[in-house]
Image 1: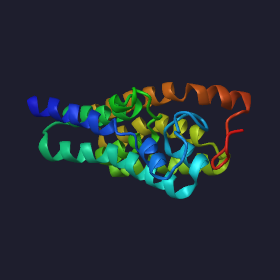
Image 2: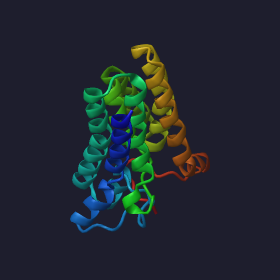
Image 3: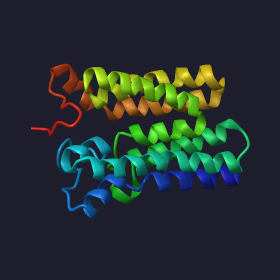
Length: 198
């Protein structure tokens, strides 16, 4: 139990490192929390600085989700503890203690967590994201659809009630963090992938 609690705390703290803010500082770009969409994530960094800083942001956000789960898989027994560690890393990205609790929307980190829980489920979810993004060119829409299906893929692939439940929690928070995107999508005002916000 103590090990589980320590790993949950460590996962939250690791998830709280805002790669978007750090990468933008390193590249001399505006603070992504105050420019573009105002979201410290890879999509906004892409708008502000291009593919290289966005790729670095995406990679580290992904690692923030995967690494804590891999450590938990190594040290813990039982899906619930491993699942909670993944959720903690995801929530750290959304509500980072080091950056005033102003975090991103968790797409890359959530997918990183999913990779640790089930690589096959990640492939199915990623394929969903790519399909929707490729057709409609909206990153937010792709994320919302992919995250809705992710718990279903986990249930079908792993049969784990713990992982499926934890992914459902991730999905709920992801939709909540995308509520502004939902309004803009409905109004036809959501910027497409690679498009700078006017």
